[in-house]
Image (cartoon, rainbow, N blue to C red; front, side, top):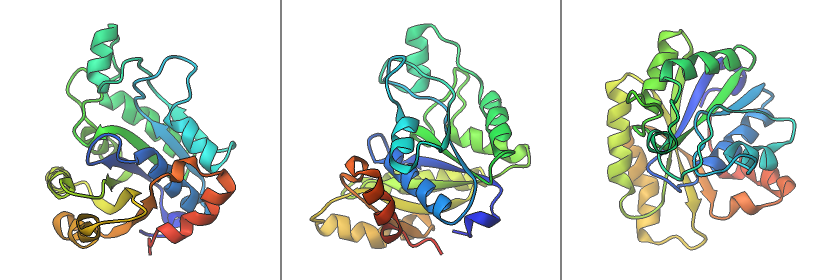
Length: 235
């Protein structure tokens, strides 16, 4: 990863699936960016599975990184489904991907780095027209905003196929995969987990940026911030 102080871009954080640790990885990346001296904002285009007033993913990031962190949650839906499915059940018309891109562009004009945490994987639909997180990246690029992707992968069997498919989908859209982070890294990794560290860069063509340990999201803020540099190798 280039020094964040030289970036004026958006980083999309996606995963090989749900519950892979994207939110905690987003928090860890936010901590790294801040520790390197860059201005930063975190955006969640669509938060699902929460009622109004409940803490969401951006609240987790703020709790781990700092109460003064700039965060934006663009859409909130109650049902624990994909944004498109949840909106359909609630009778809500979601903003088109282009509208999300416009709002994120406004955020990017005020920050050197914007981390955008997606919902689930790269091709989960964000709107009722079929627009995905990948399409959001393309829309940002058309606006002249530099955009790259970080893939959060689970450790264990089954992750390589999902990671390879994500890399192929990004390449087809000319969106750069900046790096891979293993989320929820177990305290006692087995053969499959250790093999992932070698195989994920091979199947994605992107560097392994690091491992965030299982349970990191429950750490006190001071301990989290102190530990973050040991989890990554971004240079």
